[in-house]
Length: 280
Image 1 (cartoon, rainbow, N blue to C red):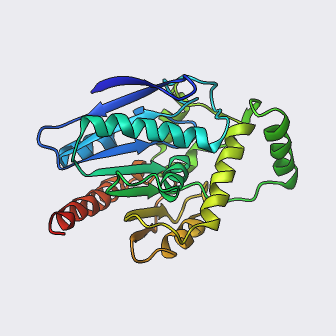
Image 2: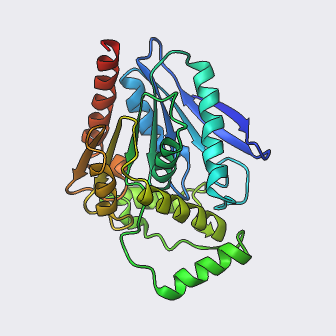
Image 3: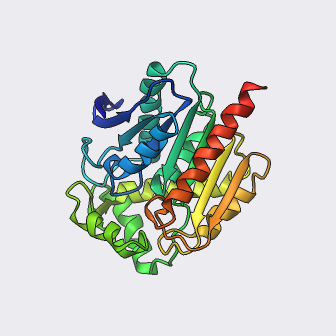
């Protein structure tokens, strides 16, 4: 495990983890979900190493060991720019290797926005898990109105996110570890919530414009993020996106009881893409 630091364009320090192998097939960069951090993906990184992939992960601004106000980002573009700076560092260390970008939940939203904004020329493909497009439940109208007011007049004000950790996985140990993790944040700012919603609206408007090869999957039993919105986006791009609905999986497919099958499926997809590209 190698730990790195990079600075954003507005001078916030971002924490990076990397796990590399000898003679790698390719590279995977991981973008985590809201409130969490890259340390929760250590087992994912190990599985990717076992399949001969170099792996890099970032703690987004306001998350984990990175700088910035906890649970806050000023806008969507700041997060997109952070990902771009992250990938520049990774590419410099991995010239000519196939590069894949993985994102979960909020990270899935960001990966899709990154890809749609024509920032994907360096990528061989992307993988997205349960992207935050729409919530799986309806927010009360007063909460929506309050959120808009906070985002406009007090964007740094943070409120409890209300996430039920028992909805992450069927394995109760996942919720226990999540609740006890000192690096997990349980509040979200008006600015970050607005940024995610803006990104979601952009995805819905441009959902049939994805050109890069991708693999998108979602658990049907996700009580946090709406799987139907994900399915609609994926099926709007049938020529270049593989879609998988896991029937008995909760929000964090990579942490659920089926995690071995989940990880194997998207690792196999990447290996297939690499083999195909070598003959084209």
